[in-house]
Image (tube, rainbow, N blue to C red; front, side, top):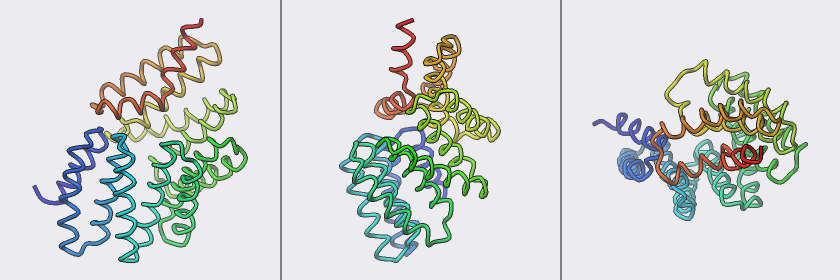
Length: 266
């Protein structure tokens, strides 16, 4: 297996929730790329070790490796890699509900990436900032950040992160109990996913879109739609071959428990 194939295999393992196997391959890739002085790829492999640990709910290990990756990118003055890694550190802090640290690292990521050619990376960070601001109930600031991200991603045509950003915007409307507006946004994301028809979409983001749609319809009293869409969401989760810990994260993200509680009360 050459190193391009090993990279693709590691990415596929990570996306399917098989994190321990992915981590082993990423560590091998880091050693190889570092020896070959391919510093951007080496830093990226180290970063993916950290991301994989987060998927596996090992947040302490995740932060350890992400900080190592950030130091590596600083050493070689790779601002794009550094900005991307700081974003992942922020996302990890958000995952453990430390929203103050999350916002700090995401803001630093945005400042760095804004001055690079990585406009998609900058937009992705803006979307994550919007998500964290939503959780802090700073809805006006969150909406502005998300809409700025969507504008950039619409222009660049980066379909996956555009759909993801629509998901964050829909969640903002859900948090404000504006379920009808959230539904309109979710369908925009689903239109993108269905149009692309790539293996990559059969992951947590695709299942999350259907799960959030079910949650909205449940709150609007359209129970048959809610049941149907929740089942579709769960089918995607179960067919993705996630690890147990990764499955638990997805079930949380699709609000499965809340939707079932609403349906049980009817």
